[in-house]
Length: 383
Image 1 (tube, one colour):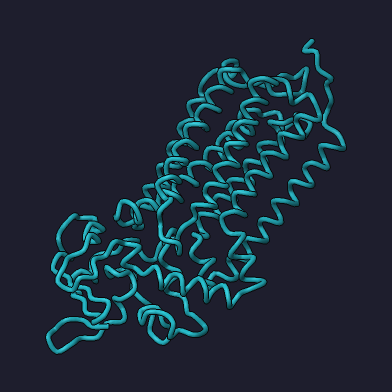
Image 2 (cartoon, rainbow, N blue to C red):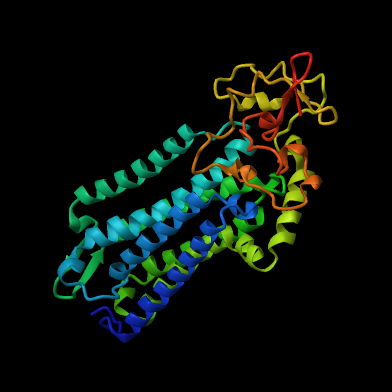
């Protein structure tokens, strides 16, 4: 009828499920290792909570693929097409994309917009992710199955309409287009926090995936009946999605295993060389003010009377107790890696980064100085 060589799920599909599960399991081991070494600063800087959530979306996306790509017989519970395709496959493809967008947006908000990414910002971003994706799925759930996707008992398969395919793929392109804009905006972040090369690699991987998805779904509408094409589609999805996670945290994990101390030393020296003044455009003129006052959510001038001198290390503390570029504690706290202890050679770091001090509050204009200041005779706080 469709001039294709139909093939029911079989041994090759089972092998595909096993191999893809192995890749996901290996990636889970990567994340477990990263969490076990959370105090290793190059790893801690990689926003593990958000990265782990992206991984969870990848796993659920894969479960949806088992039905979407016809790797199991669609009988019994597996025959609920809207559950597995809409609420697993489509939903978590979108969640994967929107979570990645928020991860990049957190960096953009702090480093480019000079605004705080507080707990409130985190919760709002999470709420937007949930509302956007769930609303889309609810709307499609309520639309007639004949217009979206429905189960065909005679074929033991789910029929997905062309309109549904075009809408779903178009939204993916829009989401990753927005992600591309954010990646471009992050290109000039100082090297300690810069993920531009990794981000470009991630973007290229996803563009390749979207291209393959578009061609497969729009040109080969009945690919699920062809063993070779459906297996290829699942492998491409899983490899691309786990590759994104490896690009996020693979390098610091590799270095923590094979070159732990040297790499951390180099990372910290580079961080010290970048300096908070460079990263946050802080004016080091002792008589000047700082653009970092814009980090205040209330847009007041609470820091306008502050004086910062990296030579004399003097700073007014009026701003310190009320303003934080990130809410702390916060699962998306990019700066929190600075509260861990350096196990060696602290003298190469600025005083605020040294191990013989108590943990910083991370809310001063320099990000690092607040908790290390003592009162001077004229009432100022001095490092």
